[in-house]
Image (cartoon, rainbow, N blue to C red; front, side):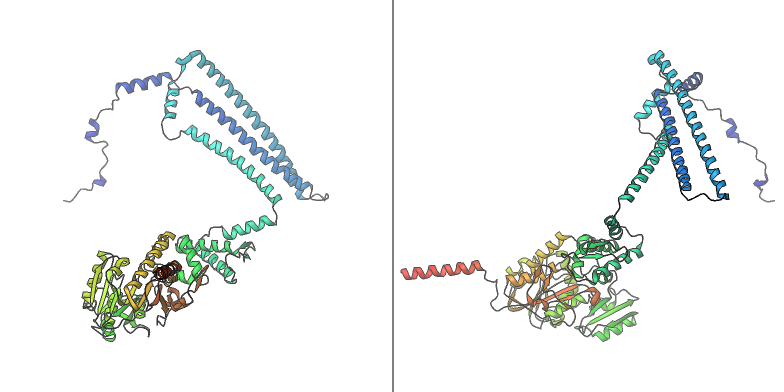
Length: 603
């Protein structure tokens, strides 16, 4: 016994259920329509379909005639070139080819005549058929309208796909239009070739250099390098617009054209908007490519040791035993560690939860070092969240004195509270409020840190959305807020107090311009930050000129220091304090003194 192999059995045909089924029956209305159509015989063409057929035949004839004329011109041109070749020579096999060309020309003429005669006959035949059909329709009147005519009108009123006849007509019209377009293009090219001069060649070369879109990434990089080389050899400003020559085509164009094209290519390559790219080009005209490439690479992860709970050496050994590859910072920091790779999440280790270290960027430690807080002092952090700088200030004060941490956002203030508890700091008081109104509540602080909100152009590696999101209105809005916060920080400090202003932006409008505004509005002095790294700030930028002491501030750039872009400025409030007296106030005071003297003399 075993299973039957059903593949070896012969097929028996349709099954039992299939044999029981009856033939399909159509409704009576459909059967009557089908019978009527079969009895009527072949359908007649409507007037619109006849017009389409007529137009199709005429277009086919015109297209064929144009093709024949074009071929005839080519053959005549070949014959004329053969006639102007030179004096007659002894017979060679080439003469046989010319005879064959003559024979081809004669045969071509005969073929053209035959085709034109056939086209005329077909058009006459079609015209007769159309006349007969029209006369038959006129005799029959409205009763002669066929069913196909009505269906055609309904079809035109509805939105359905194009019929086969319409598609044929469209193809014929496209072919005829293509022939006419080719002829027009050839005529235009001949005219342009005759009228072209040296000026047109320069314009074409310029367009090829500055407007042609690159094919791939390597070509795009090559164009950027060539434009940078072209602009790097000259120290001319954009306003002078000195004429340059392209290294490839030799076209002449201004320096402003080169900068515009370079800006568009860099935007295409690194996905920046035009406004931000133009500002960065103004800031870093020579090393713009290094700056942009440095923002495409992740910064090394850094840790800050909590000196109140452990030593950097002990913390490094504990993390190395957990599979973390790290090294100590440079000489400017005694608590920093650089992490290259880790086998464990650094934000969930027992050491992190115990408050032995803080995940903090290297550049964000610099403002606290410039502030240089001392034990038993009263310090204000005007914009404290998430608490990295606040906890560092409290640790440098050895958990003594008072650190007032203010934050405008209530939700972000919770992060400051959590970090303070985790690090075991008891000298931090967290408050929520608008920093611009803080001097009305408390003042006479020994030191004030103003880490103002900014556009984040120095931390593009962490937040790539800055490339396309930041516009001029955002910069102006941040600059206005930063000026208000810095003046509030100055007012909250005591006479002789220290104010440190910092941002994570590289734009002049948010850095030098804000400090210059504070120097003009308050009695302040810009002093050295005491930092061993960083580049001096700008004394002048384009058409703006700042205080000569602006070079005491420091700029941290990603491509030079391998850290986030930062700006740090240290200010000291004068003993007099308060706002600078203006010309109007001095004049009013002199007038008041004169009035007092006059009243005294009268008495």
